[in-house]
Structure formats: structure tokens, C-alpha cells
Amino acid sequence: MTTILVLGATGMTGRPLVELLLGRGHELRVIVRARHKLPATVLEHPKLTLVEASVLDLSDEAMAARVKDCDAVVSCLGHVLDFKGMFGQPRGLCTDAVRRFCKAIEANGAALPVKFILMNTVGVPNPDCGEMRPWFERLVLTLLRHAMPPHRDNETAAAYLHRHIGRNNKHIEWCSVRPDSLIDAEVSPYGIAASPTTGIFSGRPTTRSNVAHFMAELIANPELWNTWKFRMPVIMNTGE
Ligand SMILES: NC(=O)c1ccc[n+]([C@@H]2O[C@H](COP(=O)([O-])OP(=O)(O)OC[C@H]3O[C@@H](n4cnc5c(N)ncnc54)[C@H](OP(=O)(O)O)[C@@H]3O)[C@@H](O)[C@H]2O)c1
Image 1 (cartoon, protein in one colour):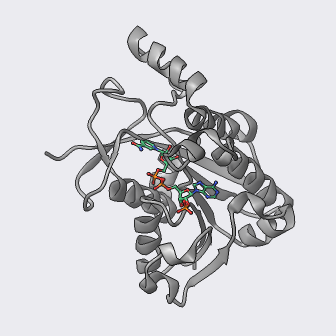
Image 2: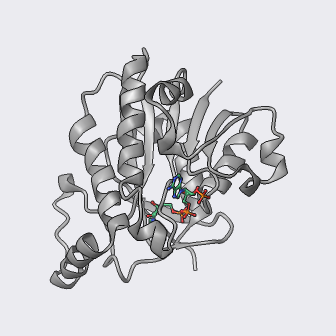
């Protein structure tokens, strides 16, 4: 039996992920601000445990209890794209959640490493791959970093896993999944690459259900996990 904690479960990617994981028979834990945003089929599912709270309001002890005996934690958190969500608090939503849940996992001292999957963005480069962007993209990303707190938050969340947790943590293995521009549609053919294969502003879109599907596969398929752990795979639709 696999037990998974999903953060951001009410989001546009979190919801299809939760439905997929429950459909596959996993034990699921979620922490949501508003339970009414989840469908009744999810809320009434016998394998769902729900805590209603704003995730960063939880104490360290409550976070440790949420991740105890979990095999995987998936963060689909993202800032609400309105003025308050982008420029208000918590500016470090994704980073603080990654940092505090990683500390909670370490505090529990699980015998086997917990898989930590972060939904990130192709706008964040992978420092291991020498991803040198054209000058125009570098300029736009620098402007985004300074003008848009959510972009900076995505960068620091990925950097926490990459630099702080690294590859030798006894309790945590991680993967930062980097979609291109997100769209909503059914699961469709998609491709995974170590680095962007097109310019990040001219790449193919990525369907949120495809991101959910890839993250569920990372949890279920040990070979896939071994391929992509400690890496930052880019996911893009490949169909027409
Ligand atoms: N938009 C794009 O094209 C794009 C492209 C690549 C990557 N991404 C990244 O992908 C991630 C997820 O995207 P998405 O579109 O699936 O996100 P989304 O639909 O906006 O969902 C965000 C989730 O985060 C939660 N959340 C937001 N603010 C919160 C707060 N202050 N405290 C607690 N929870 C909070 C939301 O809860 P509520 O339902 O309660 O608000 C929701 O569950 C984001 O990090 C985003 O940056 C986006």
C-alpha cells in the first residue's frame, strides 16, 4: 500500500492528480484551504484523509504527523494569479512548504527515503544541465525574477531540493517536474526531456492532466523514478 500526501490538491493540477491516485487505490492525504473545492467523489472516498487548513499555518508537529509513514509527497502548490496571490503573503508559499515538509520528513526519520515531487516550471533552469538560454529569454526571466514573486518562489523551491536536500539525504529523494505553459484537457501523448527542447516561450503547451499522470507514474514506477530522481524533467505535449 502506498501512502501519498498531496499539497495544492484543490488546484487545477492537484484535482486530476488526486482523482488519479485514488483511482489507482493509493491511500491519500490532503491539506486544503477549502474542502468544498473537491468533488464529492473525492471527499467521500474511503482512502482520503483531509485536513482543512492553510498549509503554512500548520505547526511543525502537525506537518510531521501528516507525512508520517508517507511514501511520497507531491506539491502542486501555486500562487493564485490575482494581485493578492502574486504580491501578498505568503510570498514563499512553494519554498516554505518544500522546506518545512522536508524538515518534517527528516524529523520523522523514515527508514526508506520519501519521494518528494515538486511541480515547478520550465522557466526555472536546471543548474546540472548547463541550460544556457538565449539572451532574450534570460532578460525576460531576470525581469520575472525581480517583478514576479511567484517566479522567484518557484526558483527557490527547486533550489532548496537541488542544493539543500541534494543527492545524499537519507530520508528524501526528489524530482522537480517542469511543465511548459499549462492548459486543461484530457490526458494525451506527452514527452519528457532532461532540458527544454525548444525556446521556453515557443515550446509546446503541457496539459495539466499529463503532468498529473507523469507524477503518478513517478510514484508507481520504480524504473521511472530511478531515471528522474534528483533531476528536473521537462514535460510537454507531443500530440497535435
Ligand atoms: N500557469 C502556467 O502556465 C504554469 C506553467 C508551468 C508551471 N506552473 C506552476 O505549476 C504549479 C501549479 O499550477 P496550477 O495551475 O495547477 O495551480 P493552481 O490551479 O493555481 O493551484 C494552486 C494550489 O495552491 C493552493 N494555494 C494557493 N495559494 C495558497 C496559500 N496561500 N496557502 C495555501 N494554499 C494555497 C491553491 O489552493 P486554493 O484552491 O485554496 O486557492 C491550489 O490548491 C504552480 O507552482 C505554477 O507556478 C504554472
